[in-house]
Length: 307
Image (cartoon, rainbow, N blue to C red; front, side, top):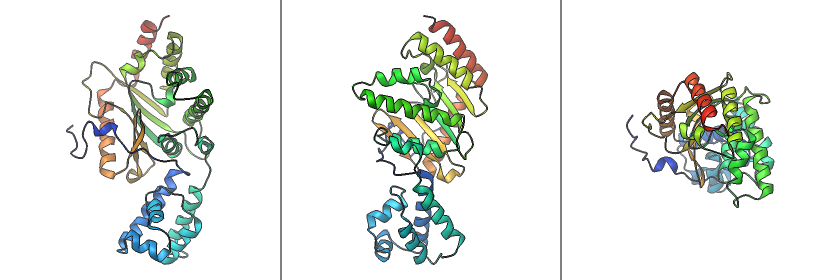
């Protein structure tokens, strides 16, 4: 697969770090996209529509880009201006507005989850499927608590003990999505991890044995598919940093999050997101299949972590 012209290998691990997320992401994105479509179809600029609605250009821009929480008054003004009163579209707008204000479980952890992790967790809570690639650590949703704790403790003094415990609570709640979600199907996880992640010592041999046993068990779930990209395979494109592809059931609304030491960056343009879907499919083709993956994990468990 050739390198897409709009991306370079260096750009894959770069991205703008987002600010705190005020509420559920999906309804704000849907509403913002519709507002922008209506504005553009009417031949209006941001300044023009903001002026007639008597709001600031920056506020309207935040609404269109899902950076701000929509208020019922602003949305009703939009509905009135575009003559949508009483329509199915108007009710849809108001449903999205109400949903955007809902307080999700992660909201109380916002002071702790920063650097774009808040947006990542918000999308994870709403996505139907997540396709991830990780190196050199294991996928977050497949980590056992002791493994996660050992990773976080290695980050000191970045985190206080109180912050560490909060982060561990967040991880526990995120993992629960693979088992149950209120009003939604269980999250489906399609994960490719580099072989270095199952050989990399984290904490102790005992922790690693427990972790690898957990991988073997979890990878047998119907909503989890785990593949290992082995050392014996030439690294495919987009395998140099960790990233996640969030599916919401509408390909035009899918989002990619790229993770670096500095935080998370978002990729949302339709063409680039489609490229990442192709990148993940290439990673899957280059990796061991599910059964081969479990056999490799068992082999490493029984030979590398026997202490």
